View (cartoon, rainbow, N blue to C red):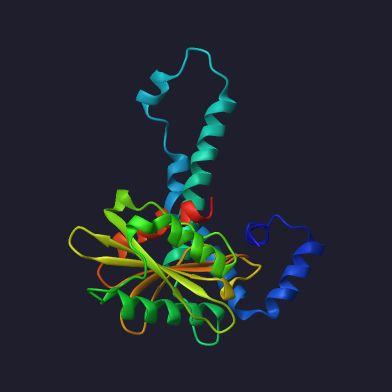
Length: 246
């Protein structure tokens, strides 16, 4: 799809993609957004191509240096900027939930967070002292390996978890808590797995709970909190995503 947006497909392959996009309005909208983003980046940075190289950079170069490494570095920097922009745009992109697998995942994750994060005495079924036993038990019940991401760098510690029911399979909830009592949950829903991975995405629940979620071929995951702000929860979600998708 990205090759199509960049105009790198031959006519035959490009025609196949165009035919497919005609029948998939959501994906066609995404492609159009990619193209607009590319145009905006070109418009914003085109003037830089005409700027002279700063004297301080030229002075730092060896007296005789081949030109291609400099160009290669510049191309690499540009590629990183573009990929980063696309990733941020994808996370920030608003999504329509009705009728989708993600909508059901979002609803269940929000309900689980709302119900159990508010509990004072019994928010979880197992304490941090029994973490390994808890994870082993949940892994057996969900028939997949359940891991607890390390969120210490975000100021959050695991306080336990619990088994949850689902329509066709069991689900799990891990709960973390900060020093000021703020809580974050990670919902595991194997019944929401899908062959096509979504990458990390953002949503806001009906009751105001913030959620970052992703789906892959093993499970649907949702990181939720009603206590953290968007930027704080994004940091937590990125930590969880990096560890669970390694």
